[in-house]
Length: 105
DNA sequence: TGGTTGACGACAT
DNA sequence: CATGTCGCCAACC
Image (cartoon, rainbow, N blue to C red; front, side):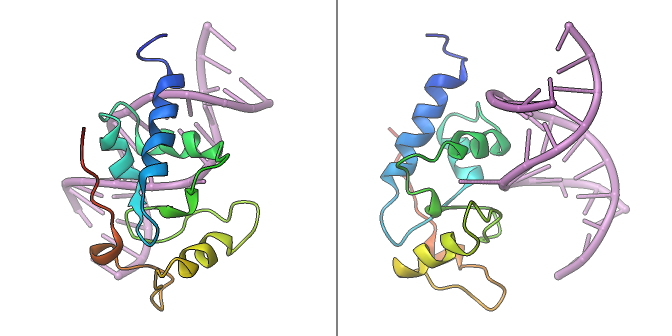
């Protein structure tokens, strides 16, 4: 299992995303740091691209905005609002308030 | 094999 | 605050 191979890293990213509690969000940068900084924020996107059973809607960019339309425009925002996340007039959320603070192992 | 793209971030100007 | 540049890793052509 190549330690540097993306396989395990991807799984790690998936694991972290699954840990994000309802009503909270994390940024790509945070995930990048969580996996040890071995994956650039861009690579995180690739990891989530396989969004299979992950709460991918809880992953937003550093500005607290949604950068992806996914397959269904507006889906992510709708899902988050359903979890109690409030969007501002700019279509962004208050990261200061909704950002999830993970506990490192 | 090599170059480009992409669900990004941080910093400089 | 807006724009431009670099860094970053993986997938795609």
